[in-house]
Length: 269
Image: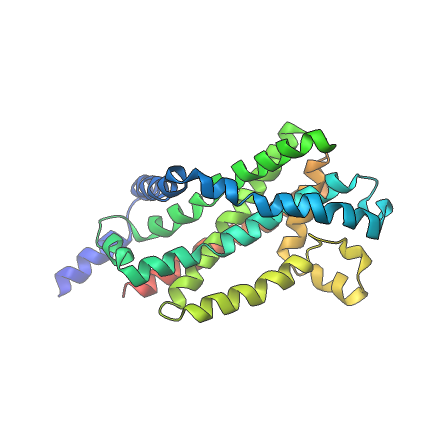
């Protein structure tokens, strides 16, 4: 029994090189699913395009150009829609883990010699690649409709968004581990937090148009800083908003991965 505990403890503390290698294996395993079914990625773009095509014109007519800081409606609204893709997509990834928990495939993965931290880090990193591809495709599709494309700035924005997506995906996985066998808890928490975070970040409407208490609440929402950073970068600028957005994304990623690794460590005791 003691020997088993010692071996398990050694496996829990691999070197950095081992963790990076195992993370690469897990990342590639997770990426095979969307690569084998690319239609799911394309189909997931339909909802954002509907928002851009139908809600965008109504937004401009209802709020007016001054609320967009001199930008066109599309230039202001598109970065928010890209953030919305990340928010919806990565916050629901824990449901995939819950399915693996129910079918027993997750336990089979735990039986492998892969380091425990790499199992969650690799899964979280997998959320980065689809976000970048989807965001880039939407930006390119909108060019004929008046969107001014700044390649380097958009790429920087997608990298920051990817860092945030890693953190949010990790938090979603941690929630799935904590609420396993109680799927209603996962969806209850996810849905309860999702829409307040989205509304208070100014994704859909300028938060400046809201009452004072909403503007104050938005200051405590990390998504607010991410949205402002994306809008600044997609407009071809780099400034304070970009820095604050990078900090918010990095803190989210650090907290998410830390909670993820802690959750999986408790899960295998």
